[in-house]
Image 1 (cartoon, rainbow, N blue to C red):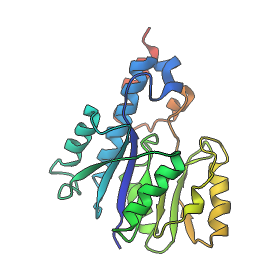
Image 2: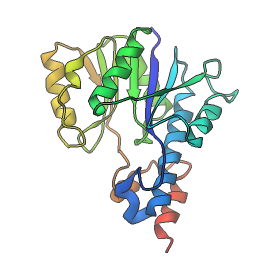
Image 3: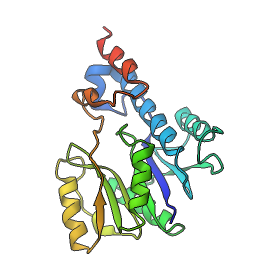
Image 4: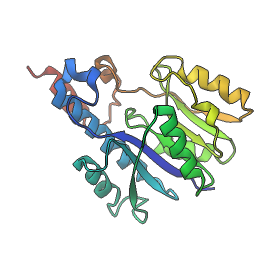
Length: 223
């Protein structure tokens, strides 16, 4: 069973993304980090073969970073080069509503769909492949985040109760998700947790082999 992958991303506009990073990186530097994380996520995703690969964005599709992401995904060396990276809009509602809508849309066309953000560079191609394999034998798969949330969710059927009325951006999201998954009777698998890049202190958890690691730390040290 092959899966589709949806990448959730926000346009890397200075002052509107990675705002908690601004004290360390400034508004421009924080937006630059958001763009690097976005392109890294797409580059890793493109190394895995998917039935469909979608970049679901906010607030619109016009930011140049999204076109860059499409070009990156279409490089001949990418496993998914034969599949176009499509752009879609997240639409209205809170994060849970937008995630649920994207998953429902994907599951109307594919047997399994995974949805990931761009904040966790530890979500590399190997982890994505592992998650896709887990969906062959489980109803759901999650990659938890060390901050108490999760960086990836994959489903074989819509489960609205995982998203309705959730208080997002807290350290209880994954715990509450486990509770709801159990109540829904799901068989799920959790992979090793990864670090989200939300606060300046998180930058020290950038993977040592992340290609832009030195660039980010150079920005922190710049006057």
